[in-house]
Length: 220
View 1: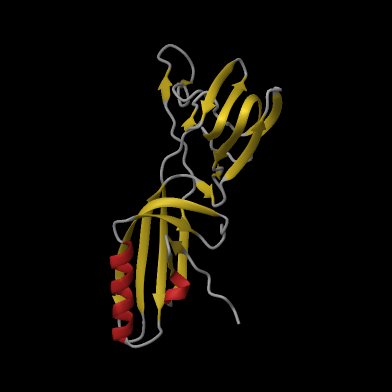
View 2: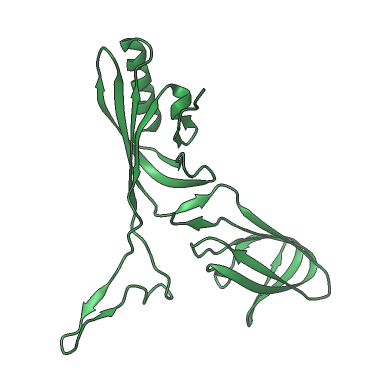
């Protein structure tokens, strides 16, 4: 028996509710750009990433999901339509698409009722989503600090640059490049530790444990 393809809007499972996925379309990621024409020269100045330390930024992406149902009576489907409108319309949710089960989008939803005739019903759910697919599982790096300074690499396998959360029990001195921070029995973020895609060498010492937590994200 074939399993219906489903979309998760928060905890709302479209297939489990009886909907058939008829359409699922997400616009491609579109970069924010800023070009200034050179009045006395060829071409333009590209200022797209001047204020973002060279990191490209992206616009929201439009998601369109069309759902159909031919099960039950017309009154049954009327209740189904009422339920999805009242549960989803106007709310922001994590959205899991069938081809990306390990990641989620973030967007505010609008539910449009297309029809509910004698044979079947249809609704279209639209959303303006943030550009990223966020990984369901958060990455956690556990460091056990002693008086001896040690080193390790923090790897961001995604595309989005992230400032991780630092959770310390005890006192841990963390060094990144020529900068350092002492985290003592607290949870904080350190903007200097910006995890761009790739590997980042850090050193640590002290007496305690430190969790470095971050969520990777990709465009596709």
